[in-house]
Image (tube, rainbow, N blue to C red; front, top):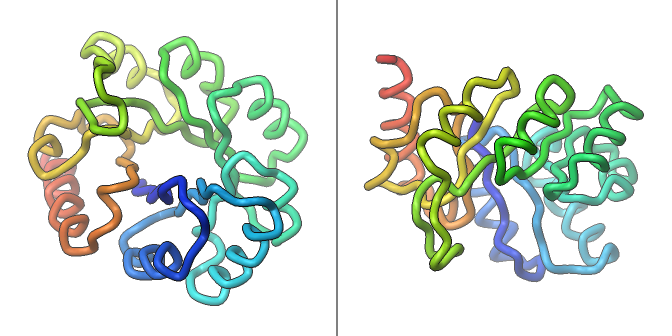
Length: 193
């Protein structure tokens, strides 16, 4: 599983093109944009014309997902909301960002996946310590597919535990050639484990 997360910026042609550029390499794109619903409506309509709509994952807005006939949603770390939504709508793929083993335990067996981190030091979380090896080990013992996030690049991909179901990120997905190299290394490591 390879999930691109958009930067938290206003929708633009640049963001749209960055998604189109890596579409073939990703399993989904989480639209975490800084915009009102009207601007997101327009952006989603444009995006549906340019990429496979099944790859579009709406961030924390069930209304927008349903309005646009999409089937995937990603929640902030609010397990009660995500679980309730999944129980009411089992036909949709529902994921959530998680930052603790307790959150993973709570959603295990209910949601379709989670994004867990941060697993390495990252400029987006300055001064915050990454998840510890024992916590990562505990989290990876659950059945739910767990996608890593945080500090994943050409220097850390060799250290990423292959029990993760894949990885996600923001900066990592902004340059196709760079992403291809990291993804190739990940797939090679996983084929050998």
